[in-house]
Length: 341
Image (cartoon, rainbow, N blue to C red; front, side, top):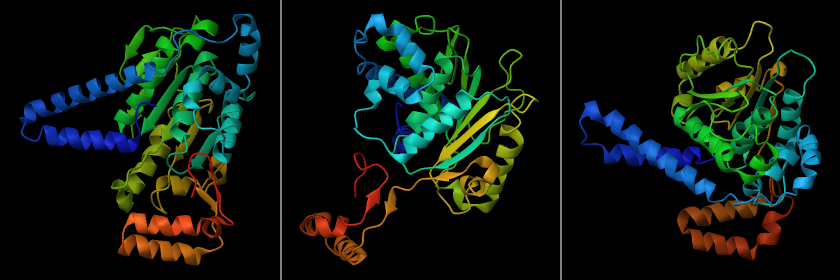
């Protein structure tokens, strides 16, 4: 992914301040221009992480493709190693592997619904909104993918990251020459790949009626962090968003009920739309927490919190280092290598 939700929010706030004296009739266009330039810079930065030439063995191409077609984790780690700089994996990633495989390789035409809650900074968007669509695209498991987030700019950035891979990833060029390159439609927020797969971005709550790709309706919808910290506080806003999901999103697919919907996000409120869906069995709910088991000595963590509030970080951190063994005992986190206590 090119940027996180927090990085996008920071940019948008800064850009708003930059244009506070810009005439209203020019402000929107100027802000959009700045956003597109910023996103393009980040896209070029991503491309610098790609190898100039693939290190994959050309003689093993058929073997790789055969395995990658049924093994999402192998596909992701083989062709996109720049996203796997942190060692280890967590329960969230293993579950996503299972869900992706179930959706992509299903033998029935009936659509799946999956609601997954996961903490921030655990790779949920990179896996769900970037690598999974790439898998579906490369192997033609889906023909029209719709990706939706609270801010359309976040999904526009995700699509630009996908396009960067299709434009310049040397591993994809080696094994999938018929897929890579700039397709016939190649715009911000929407593109069609050279093997005929369309991906389009939307913001939550937007009009979705009549969304088509020729005669095709969407066959996969990814909902990634549909809510924000402000709107989720209002019950009226929560109700409106849930109605939109139920009436607009779930009816995007064809009449045969084959649409797959994958809803993932961080829980922002105990009555958020995601929280509501997690209470419904037919959404195949799954909840992941950054701390799976709390430490035994919570009294020491209370002391740490008091020091943090009343003194400063360094004093509190020294207390933690001094008592680390006791304070960590019994704790189990979701992804130790990335987010320890």
